[in-house]
Length: 313
Image (cartoon, rainbow, N blue to C red; front, side):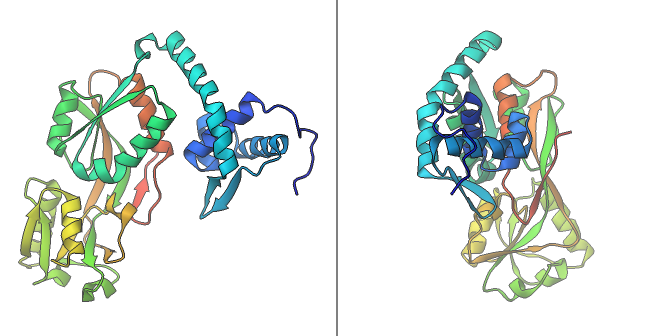
């Protein structure tokens, strides 16, 4: 039973409802505190007071995250129109050009479907008045669309260059061998080119810089790769590995977010490094909605054992 601090039965404050809304959105006290610009104890205190006012249990902890109860979600839904109205008033006053904002974003298939899909859905719930347009293309297509002004923002993980854009890294990872779980290679703590001598390989097509790096490592180890299939997306390589066709050397992010039991990841040595980056126009500042989405991504980056979230510069 919660202690009575004298707030039971009183009307919830707007600040307490704002903390509830933010904590439901981000799922972690640390992220909610950063978003609101307050301390973690202040977040916990606001939720505690709200629970006492409403005489409801609003959250339960599971696997390091705070999960809202049915009562919390009901309270969230009842109070959400208040905040949507306040946000519309805020935009009408300070961002008149964003009365009907649109986020135009481009990404390769793997990042679009395995990473951005969930984040865009959550962002849409936070900003229901914002329309979202997403284009799927190769890394070069993404860079070109942003450089030409057809897209506000891109996300890529392959090394590209273009004078019309700048890259802002937000995640890093080292290449991993993606291996069928039943393969003898799955028992090894790490994989080298020599381990792959004669092993069927699923490789990215040669236009990818990481493919060039991998070919050089095989050449330096005097290993001739047994390339069975060449693909243009990491998710295609992953699915061929799942089918037991061979081994792939790829960026584990974002496939590791939905790793299946029939696939294992092992570090590949020597190291091939990747950075997942936002692609922004080189000469103009990003739109307000693009900046908000970038902040949203940084606050909501998933945790995994294979890649690392990078701090904003």
